[in-house]
Amino acid sequence: MAHASSVDVVEAFWEQVWNAHDPEKADDFVVEDFVITNAGERIEGRENFKAWIKAFLDQVDDLRLEVIETFQNQDGSRVASRWRVHGRNNGVMGTEPDGRPISFTGTAVWAGREDGKLLHNWGERASWELYRRLTAPGAAEH
Image (cartoon, rainbow, N blue to C red; front, side, top):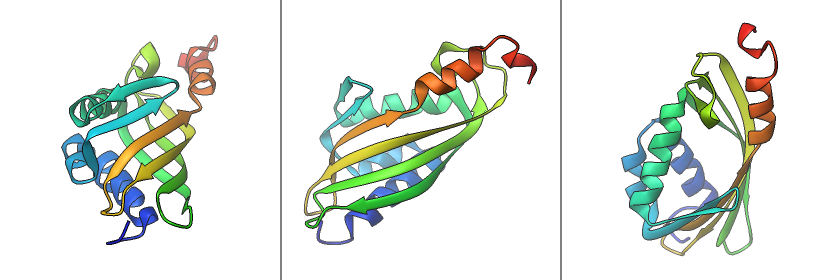
């Protein structure tokens, strides 16, 4: 990625798309045929990716993505990022939208090209742990 470091591109994506709650801004970062593979599910195409982002933002009020660390391989074609999301439950993973504070971690590995555009993202998040916390007996009372 010639114009900026790959780390800068990914961290700008986190800030301008997720933290700004602006799925349309993904147009500035990802190619038209972008692919995200999240928890084994493959979502193809930039428009489908933006719809996926919007749907997730709708489930987590006041979402804030905190970057823990981001690093790249030598040629910048791969970036790995560890992050934590904070927000309030608005029905994430089909749970009751109770407004409780939520937090979970995740990792993302990105493929990018020399011009800084992102090609593919492989993401994993601590969904099972979050789901267990949200659905545990008495969880809604906390």
